[in-house]
View (cartoon, rainbow, N blue to C red):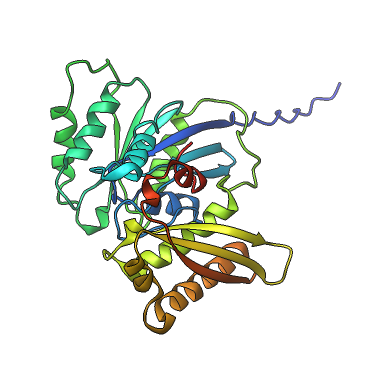
Length: 313
C-alpha cells in the first residue's frame, strides 16, 4: 500500500464573466477618455469640444476574468437640429439591454441639469448602477455635491434598488480604474465571451478612420464650426502600401469650406498629416489620406446622410 500523500487536484478556475456596460453621462464628462484608459488603447475619439462622440462605439476588454463590452455613447446635451436629437435619442437608449450602467460624472463642475436627468432615469430602472466620479485628479471639488444630487434626484416612481457604487477615478492618470473594472466584472453575469478574445472594437473601420479625421479637425477648429462638420470615408484600399483613403468633409456653407481648407490649404494639410500619423499608429501600417471638402446645405437634417454617417440606426 502506498502511504505517500496524493497531490491535491488543482483548484477549479473561477467562472468566466461577460456582459455589456452602458457608458453614459452628459456631454464632455470624459466618457471616451475613460473608455480608452480602461482598454489601454484608443477606440473612441477625444476632444475638448462637447458632443464629439456621435455614434455608439463598442470597446471590448478581454482578460482572464472574462469580457466587458462597453457601449460609449453620445453625451446628452441640449439638442439643436435633427443631428442633436438623434444623438440624444441614441444616448438615452444606451442602457437598453445592458447588464450594468456606468454613469460618468465630472467632479470639477457642479451637478448640471443633464446629470440630474441621468440620475432620475437610472433610478427608474432595475439594472445595477456604478458611478465614476471622473477628473478626481483635479481635486474633486464637487464630488460631495454629486453624491447628494443622486439622493435629491430620486423620482417618485423610482424602483427599489441597491445603492450605487461610487468610484473616484481619473481617465488622465488611471486613478481608481483597477477598482472600477473589478467591480464591473463582479456585476456582470457568468457566461462565455461575447466577442472573440482578440477583438478590441467592432466599430467599422471606415467610420473609425472618419472619426480620427474629425478629431483632428476639431483640434484645429475648436469652437469655430465643429458641429457643422461631418466626415465620410468614400474609398478605402487596404490592399495597397500605403493604404489609400479618400475622405469627404461635409460642411453646410461655402464660407465654412474656406475655413476648413485654410489659407493656401494649410489647415486641411495639417489635419491630413496629423490624421495620417495617428492612423498609421493605430493600424500599424502607413496611410495616405486624400481629403476633399464638400458643401451640403443642411446635411445634419438629411436622414439618408445621417444614416450613411452611422448616426441613425
